[in-house]
Length: 282
Ligand SMILES: [Zn+2]
Image (cartoon, rainbow, N blue to C red; front, side):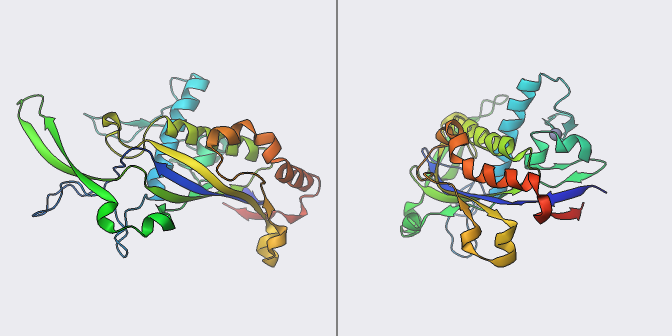
């Protein structure tokens, strides 16, 4: 049994803006009569398009895996095959707790290995449209684009209709990071910003090679909710990171030491007198 601790939670909030059209499919690929071949994923109640937190998290993880594999220069880093015989897809997963807790990828994004699981320190909530964008009529939020693909073997052309969220749309994000190790949280948060920066120069969702899915993050707030907050509910115990509003992921990386100095000081005190930590078995 491994003992895990919790010193508090860092909550990061802000906006994700679609710079180009965004194609996050509902996973349905069957044409309805009069419908599109590939609709965007929508909230079943409001019908507004949204971005599942798992889609954003998965994308951040895969970009960050490549980054770490490059730094480590380890040919066996991508150790698990989740594809098929004809289409192998190799990913990285640490097999046990001891490896995961020191792995920058698995300790942040989690690992479900053969021997044990390592729950992710990150929670990414579903991203819903901002209030401003929710005021717009549904038909202005998405557009349907015809796309022609050519079968390389038969040379037959195939016309399909894809739906995408229009460029400019803004979604709200909320990311929660569990501070479980006082010697790792700074590196973990910086790694999160690195993954977010990598995504901004890559794409989210489908058809990235056609120019879809360019996104940009702008932060609204970052705070540490220490255990005292959960014990007392007192807002005064929360540490707000100052001057975060509208900042980009790159600026946060650059100004990390200054911005996080209050949180750092508080957590360093915790190292000296770690009486508050909650412990639990995993
Ligand atoms: Zn790992």
